Length: 360
Image (cartoon, one colour):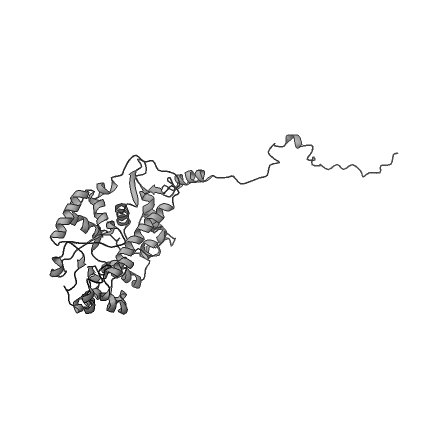
């Protein structure tokens, strides 16, 4: 009987070695595994199926079939007076019921709106009426009849000139309709000082150095109030040497709280350009820019109402958005018209997703 030096043969089932199955393995088995890759274009195309607003042509160029007549088709104005009233009445949105702001902030927003001067930009009027010759002729007639006053703001270009309603202004100033300068000697030093403190008169140097200053009475330091009358125009030192002794120099007409108005308009234009910069191509559908302006706020649609009834989050409260925190609830259309009038953007017809907005 032979002796075996190895262990006895086992009857259990053994797994075959890897070499025996090598011929049946997949040819891609030796490649390293990785998650499926999604290109930016593919991700945008997929998101466009899920979200019609945030995915439509997010980073691509919109089709352009010509200039859009969206503003003229949705606005019916025939005169400069109607345009001024329309601009002033549509500047801000109504305060929502669920504002997300306490009573102090709500009072601050309402007081800020109430304190703004009755002024509109000439560029805004031109954009609404779209008839340059007719608008300029009508503005001249209104200025000559003292129904409106045209103000030029140095350092901001002619497009920033304003039309202010001066029905309550002094009768003496009504006669001076051709220029914004007030000659020396018209008012006494006491009257001039009172007008400067109220914000109806400013010195030429303050306009040149600070074109967007705050003209409210509390914003003018006491030192500037006392020395504002001693500043004269360049090149007139000799001509007004006698007037300097009396503390009177040429001044310019202004409107109280003109500074906050200019800063608010500038912030609105900047916000429009910032929203367009979020698109790589510098253009986006008008509906998308409006949604970005308003923010992801809750609305009164049925599914948001149902979410609030169940205690679920249905969006951000308006008071937490930039529209209400920094722009005091400015209406998107008003800011869009202001940016169009200033030449920063243009509207074009896409033919598929409505009007498009493009940086100029």
